[in-house]
Image (tube, rainbow, N blue to C red; front, top):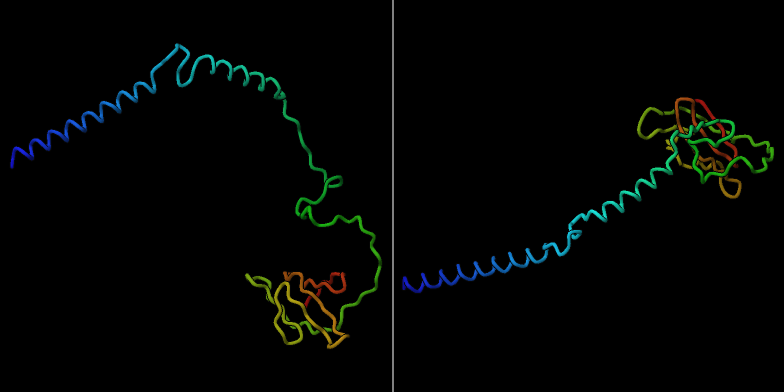
Length: 161
């Protein structure tokens, strides 16, 4: 019984040894130099790439071009490029804000709120004034320390309580 285990163990060692030997020969054959320029980084290829880089470096200007931002000629950097510029024709329409009771506001929180006509509104809410076909919609655009920014019929208003 002991000889069977010993013979089995010897066969395993021989098999593992053969596998290691085959892996070694495959590795050597794979990385064997076939030519003096046959390297991972051949000298010819390195020199070729170096000359390409030198050519590209010559195209780079020696001095930096100074860029100046002038407020008069350029657009507002804080506005979205998708927003329309002021090229539209503006028609003077006499729009007055409907009567509302502004009772208070909280602007220094994560969710600024305004109390208008005994109801609490947040930014983006729409206030419906009146009923039926004569109902008017006033949208709350922003609430900050200056007051409540409202939009009614395309005209923006600022109301302070």
